[in-house]
Amino acid sequence: MSGIAQGRRARVRLAVVLGLTAALCTALGGAGLAATAASRPGASHRYEHIVLMGTSVTSSVDSVIATGAFTAGGSINLGANTGKVTLGGGTLTLVPKFGPSKQKFSKATCLLTITGRGSYTLGHGTGAYAGVTGSGRFTIVNHQVNARVGGKCSTRKAVAFQGVITMTGPVHLAR
Image 1 (tube, helix red, strand yellow):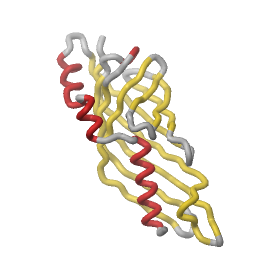
Image 2 (cartoon, rainbow, N blue to C red):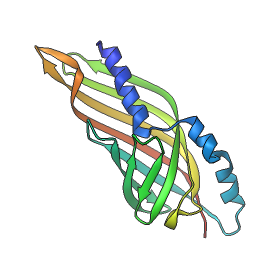
Image 3 (cartoon, rainbow, N blue to C red):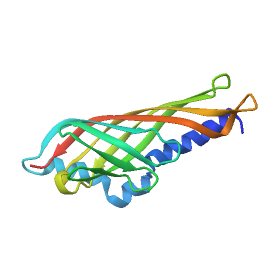
């Protein structure tokens, strides 16, 4: 498998990292979320910063830390295709829309780097996050080191992975 094919596999991993589709957004009624929260009396509007970080080559569960309008930590099971972010005190649903990305593979170092950007919607909160909705933009930086086999980079065996998705945007908090 070539570096390009490996890049495609890593991009598939990236898609699994968020593991969501436009159909999910439609099924959940995401388009109406922001309008509902914005029209609710007493709703407040502030910014939230959300960072998703994955470091496992094999696990689809990644860490989530949110700061800004609220601060919380938790996880997202990126392989579950639900977009469900589990935080202390409740859950949120995250739906991304991927934009352009770039990938670079070094045959000398066996390092694959993928950078990209996109937008997201946030909503369907439960517990402490009931009524929280929002949207914004994100950036992605993924690094993957592949094993060296017979003096060449393996295209099938990753030995290390780090993926960081940084999201920023306004949120509406129900009072």
